[in-house]
Image 1 (cartoon, rainbow, N blue to C red):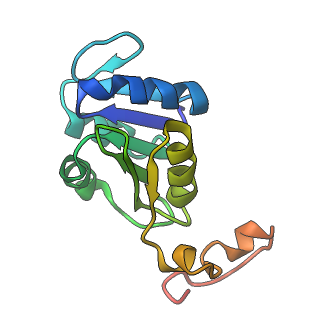
Image 2: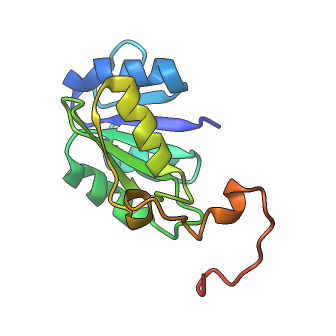
Image 3: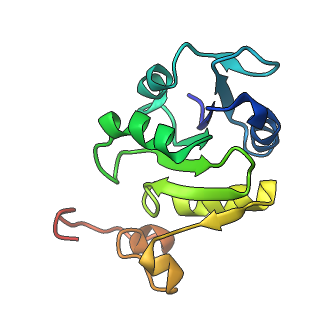
Length: 151
């Protein structure tokens, strides 16, 4: 099982993907066969194939493509992979899904650092330096038991 999948919506972003791959060890998926990539026929089919098999999916391209292709697969924050979207220039690195529990917020910060982009995190607890209740136990190696709907 691969840890992260990088999906290119724009082949001009291959250098960004290659930089990320070198740092975190991901597989790169692209509609055009390029050096070091896995060729795919469609982004939607690729997402369907990898969604439940990876810890994170990193889209490089338009946010709309990212959202439309992950929407049918979203279940809940406890099982969904971290989803990050990077614009094709590498300027913005955006945490899209599974921010705390799935690790998207931390990965977003790491990727922004790697490529020199700006991390965009919209989670209130992150932006106000508050503890996130849904990861507090994990952060301190505590064992927690709860009905997740009531958390």
